[in-house]
Image (cartoon, rainbow, N blue to C red; front, side, top):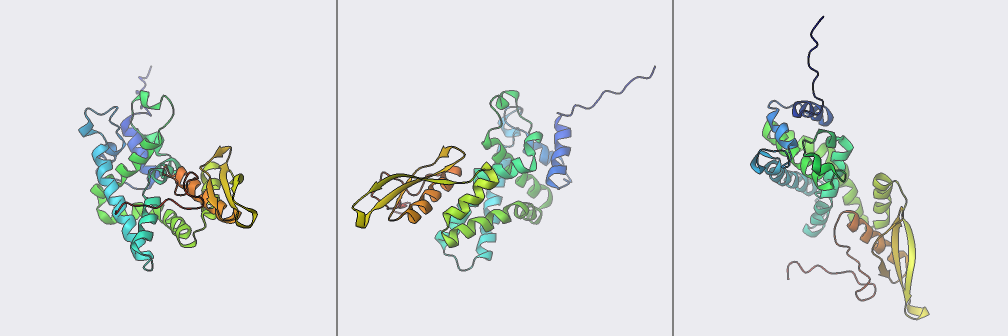
Length: 257
């Protein structure tokens, strides 16, 4: 009778490292980098040995590469416009979306308690940034730049199109169909003023989820602003057009005051 060899544990860190390399299309010279990127603090010997430090580095590299790409691609844009595009692209929502699309959640080395209520978006976002750091440490800045732009260039283009056209409805339509498998519906929730100078309050709704409403001087303007609010809330950001302010007025930013 032959002795059977012990089967490999498909959930071992070694196997997750191999699977991750296949999913992202990058072969590490030093696999310890990707192992560190996949290891959450819930299973690490200490927080120093988790992917938190890698995430810190990856976030900085991601921001630099995206800013450089936007700066070079859109020379006609001013600082404020560049900042808005960067804030859209370098976000938890986008990083988590890419991780999910790649299937990285199957490679995460985390404690069982973390998965009790499903995979948190923050874990998916953090591991993408940690993987950026791993690629950088293993292959240098050019390898990291290639890795980042492979997934971020479509996000940059989409954000820039929304910025240049101001067409929030078009951008929301793309986001809804791509991420929520639904189509935005615009609900009239209020009116104000005399017939000759009426304002309208409208809210965007996707798959039963209603977003913060917005006022406009006509229904078209109100719908655009309602779409802008929905986009911000989908990105876990504060909506720019809020109903409890002066009718039709967007909330101003006073960060530099």
